[in-house]
Amino acid sequence: NTRTLSEQTGRLSVEDNYATAEDTTSTAGSVKKQDSIEPSSISGGATGVGPSGAGGHEYAVAGTVPSHQRPSRKSYDSKSLPIRTDGSLDYDALYEDESDNDLSMESHGSVVTHLLSQVKIGMDLTKVVLPTFILERRSLLEMYADYFAHPDLFLRIADLKDARERMVQVVRWYLSAYHAGRKSSVAKKPYNPILGEIFQCHWDTPEMPTGDETSNVEVKDGPVPWCRRDQLTFIAEQVSHHPPISAFYAEHYNKKISFSAHVWTKSKFLGLSIGVHNIGQGTVTLCDLNEEYIVTFPNGYGRSILTIPWIELGGTVTINCPQTGYRADIDFLTKPFYGGKKNRIQGEIYGPNDKKSFLSINGEWSGLMEYKFNDGSKPSKFETFVDVNSIPIYKKKVRPVSEQQENESRRVWREVTAGLKMNDIEKATNAKFQVEQKQREEAKERKDALGEWETKYFKGVNGESWVYATPLLHRLTLENRDSKR
Image (cartoon, rainbow, N blue to C red; front, side, top):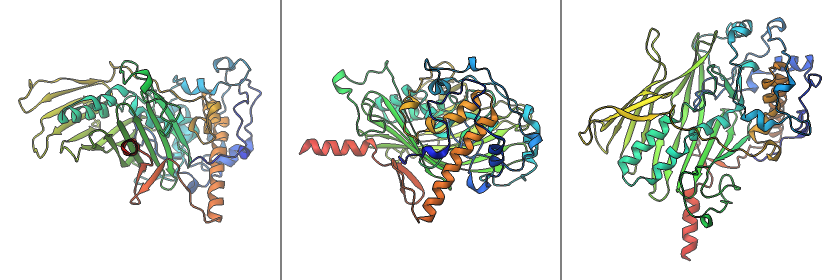
């Protein structure tokens, strides 16, 4: 995972300046290279799991779109780009800029129509590649950090003394996680991570004191070693390319809480939609209680892909705690063909061994969700469970691109991000090709040497699951053991 991507990839360096229209490294030949990419070399999904509801695989039938149907190259205004005082492009500002052009597929209708003509209903889309212009300007690994856009809801789980209240809070945090990633009204997909890519970030929660200054030292053996004990830290790693598996982990040392997950997707073409089945699970761990909450993920659907595509989630997810016996079933309801609302959910939370739920939830995961008690313990009328549009989204903090390793997400994809921001699709496509070509070359080298890829932060368990190698619970157990000696 810490393998350094060679500077011989031909990508522009951080210091290279994209500020002038004359600085165009893309060539006609580079587009031909993109057209000749072997489908088997890229995996992908337009609507995988994740808070934004988009991600996973990448679809494209690169190589089948005639040149006269490709999106035309667009000019850009350098004044709209963030430029540093030394004249170089400010990549950090590019990533933090969440404004979007909300590009309609109708403006590239010939490309999309030709692409769809190459696939059949029910076809597995794992090896189909989408055109560059629908990318979201960030990696799938970064998208998974949106699960913690409301870190206060996550950390509050560890503060509750009652097992039933903790279960309810886990569900509240989980259901609040899916709206944060929708930065655009148009469904777009994040970059498909390359093998060994990592993403690190953290959140501050100043209104939640977690100890005095002396206790807030850096957690050197944590997932983000420059962060303190009173910060929520996050790391993600692309642990496999075939199938494309992403693993991610978050922890808060002072609260003694962590979350570890792995996800990969199977995608199918459904006619005017793309469906993605998400495989994997996540586990919330309360270290002081030795308590775990195991969650699954909804499926994703990319709708109206010929016009203005949008994401919806569907299917039943479960949350259960083996130690206490509490469990929850949550249905993500897809919109009926005629009428009905988007993004609806219905949920039930059950006590140990109970067949009837003690709490019911309904509403929209993108807005207001309400709940009522069914066991007579409290008034049986619907009250606000969580309204995601009325609570603050906490901004994650990421190291500057110039300080990142070569395999960190924002550094890996910086030139693609710059090209997309400029609306220079040729530049973005060329930069994307260079990143992926380097990955193919490294895979060939490993195959020739009969070598295996070694992950750094996550390890495989039983051949199908991935867990963080040094979770907080494990480290705390060692600390307690050492303190007793």
